[in-house]
Length: 154
Image (cartoon, rainbow, N blue to C red; front, side, top):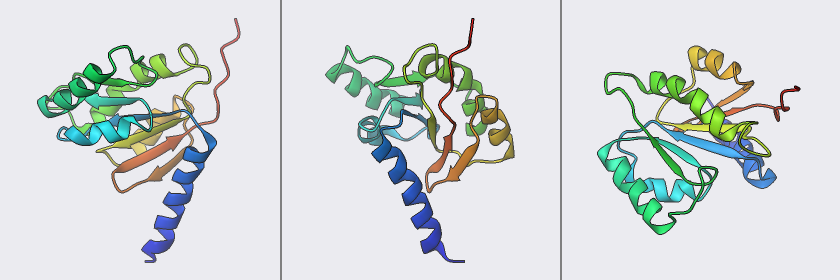
């Protein structure tokens, strides 16, 4: 297996989103992500599981920029400790879409980058309900992409 070619494909995928200015939201399901949060938040808004270590890192960001909106800041969300990272992601999709989708952002997010969970058929099915139709595994999780959604006609 040629891992170099796979890495090149992931890097090209990632480069496109960085260079295109695409609105990307991160969701971190790693309960021990901690201090890495500050660097990730520089790339876009982050939703992170609310654990003591992650909350401490989020609190530092909130103290430095208390007026930062949810469209660019950090949101810590509660989880059931018995649920899997996959379940935690599925449970949070509606809230993420409400806060970063067509009703809250212009343009709405078109990229969801997950950390701490790998893409699988169940997640592809759940994400497709929100229009995501491209999925790329990464070392830390996966990237899901959808076309730019159009506002609902009234």
